Image (cartoon, rainbow over all chains, first blue to last red; front, side, top):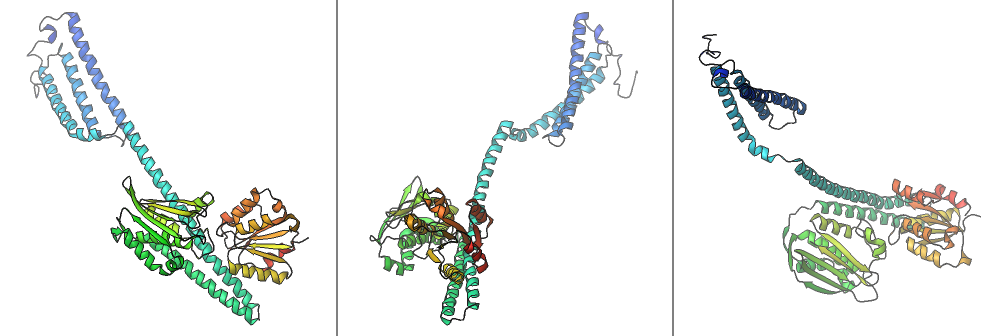
Length: 368
Length: 130
């Protein structure tokens, strides 16, 4: 014991603490029991932490800090046990070394904590996490709803397209069967003509479908400052025959004269709205088409108002913008126009609304 | 007594041409009245006097502008006129979509024919009691 390797267990150079100074029994045991109580608690905490780490397995942030803390608290506990032991065994060297080690571990813990602090501050509380989850859920639901809409659009598109392709093909099938069973020249001629008619119907439908597909794909290639007046002029120019027949009085009121938008898309929108007004005019009065642009709450609006046949919105509001829906059968139409306009406008974050009264007229308003 | 009148409701003129010639072949005498959409047929049936009422076989297309086949059936169902007692409906459509078949079933139609109309598919209905 006298001269062990580090002199750690040397006890003969100092008196035991009991005889160093004047301890009463009460004060001495008060000191010792307090030391033991702290040491015991400090030795218990690592078990709890260890249990916690094991239970949480990989799901614990800063696991190294936990281990460091276990070490730190064990060391602290050891200092208190040694301190209590000094009352009988004055191994002050040992005590010093343990204090030294504890000091080092404590500083490592300090440095470790300072290092992880910024990251730890980023940790979210349960409430914050819950709020994030709620926002995400909302976003997911929103995009889910959009997907469902797109899906049902697609469903309707396939349904309508397949129907409109099947009809003329069925007709051709029936006509060919009829042709086989007849020997009348007149009837045969009529049937041939109807076959031709059906074939061009198939072609027309396919053209319409591919135009829908094309428009879905248009990228923002020609985005720029587009003038409403210029686009309107182009639309009227392209429909010069229809304009000549309908003889509309066109009132332009472009308070906002241009918009940052895709030229092709704006033209498509105006084309469909203006030709609808031309097509579904009333025979009872001269056609008047009023085009207005205005600004409201930071959005540009375009409205196209006519005094034509109008639509019974009570019955048809849902169908108005759906593909291949038609409300008048006296003129040619594909039932695609308004569907495309709605898609184009919505794709760019806007919307379209309609007001109409039968036999008074219709107003379409596009919000860009 | 078999049906004594056929009411054909279809916007497709070629299909009507085919249907009429086929029915004529089976029964050259039967009265056939074509309409371009449900609304025209409905107006006609509503305005027709009771005395003239006949037992009608309605051949009804589904997709038509203005008023489609199902809207027509809905109107008939909600009407308090007695026209529904004097008619049976057979759907005549290009659609073989299950949702159309289901919907037709819900209106308790007599039958569902997929276009093009063929002799064997229509003759059964023509010989049925109206």
